[in-house]
Image (tube, rainbow, N blue to C red; front, side):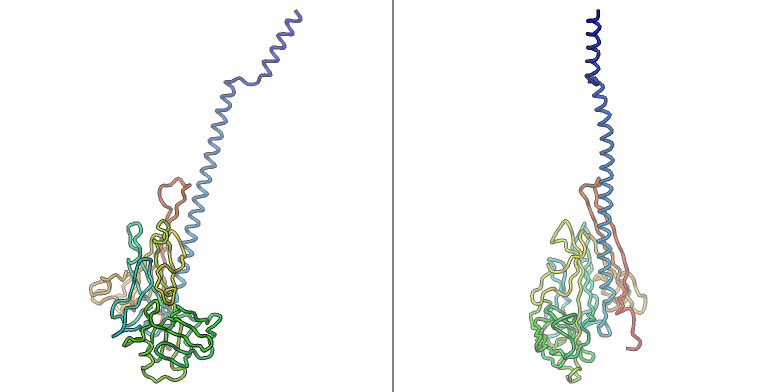
Length: 370
């Protein structure tokens, strides 16, 4: 009897030591799986939300930074230019069209017969077509206040000698090839591009064949030779020189088709070779760039004018009179950017648009005492 009882107790202890049954184990695994699934799903949603916030933040930061740069440049447009905010360029017999920077694949030129370059040169709908919409291009002109109204001691048809004062070899006054210079005497001006600098003799050379076709010594008018021959007669200090900057904004959808870039380009970027692949990208994934202009025509003062060819003739945005680039006083800027993160549960791009209006200080305000 004692042996039987001991055997039963031994079996009961063995059964207890074997743990949970198979059914209990399956139930526990199922519950654990559900809990882990819910937890991982929550973590995944949190991760995607974080990616969304980071993508939006990066896009908005880049968009805001780009707009700040554009606004800063536009505030200076027209500053240091003569009354009328134009600079003469080579024209007449023997002249060729002046080139303008633009997006890759373009070959912009001033219209044939142009005698001057305006402070604002719109090129509406001349940029790349993105998402079925044409983008805009604009070139603006302003003086560089670090090298302004310096005296010249000698002037030829292709060179000038800078008087003592500015350090053309070092510092903010340093002159390099490819820079643009406005030479002025009395009310006469001309725009030239530096092709060589001799810091020892202080001679700046403007050889023919520069990248923008500004140096045309054989042209009948608007060049350095014509300015040199104009009244009054040259005397030391009567002819002056100022450095100008031509800044062009456009979208580049060629370098990286999937990620269009907003490009800021100063002058051409090369003294002798015209190259539309130059310029600095200040924002990426920009797919829309639009400029419109507020004009002062002495009458209706139209706003948000696109400056399309139809606006430059009678019957356009300015009514009976054609709109003119010299009437532009403000610019309206619209920049749109996109951002897409492949980890996000979205089938469309994240997008944002910034708009701004800038008055050209050098053109919107008049110096009563000048």
